[in-house]
Image (cartoon, one colour):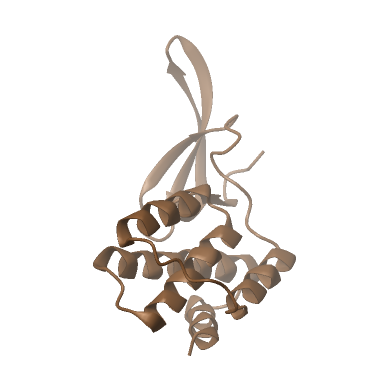
Length: 157
């Protein structure tokens, strides 16, 4: 259970801060909701408090290290399917909210970018993944977002 002021990750949106916990009546049933303000864009999201896949806690140092190790491993096979098939597959991974899966998408897009031009959608997705990773790692371990992005970029320089 989160408290007001806690940070939480909303899959697909990024890190947000819990501003309030409200009770609402929906379909004749009273339900409690976290009111979360997403840091990246200021959007407000309502998530049921009893939702199992609605939000999650920030990653710990162990998972951050796993992400960095994953980003450094460039010895993978690059997906050469059509851009729209890759895009759909990558969007599913991003929507899980798992930092490791987001890192996998980022790594695949960075490596693909080295081989050929990315589509407009893939370029936006690469930026989105880098932003999601940098933001969560930054808040989780108290490092500046710019510093995290620089570290990520250096893995692919």
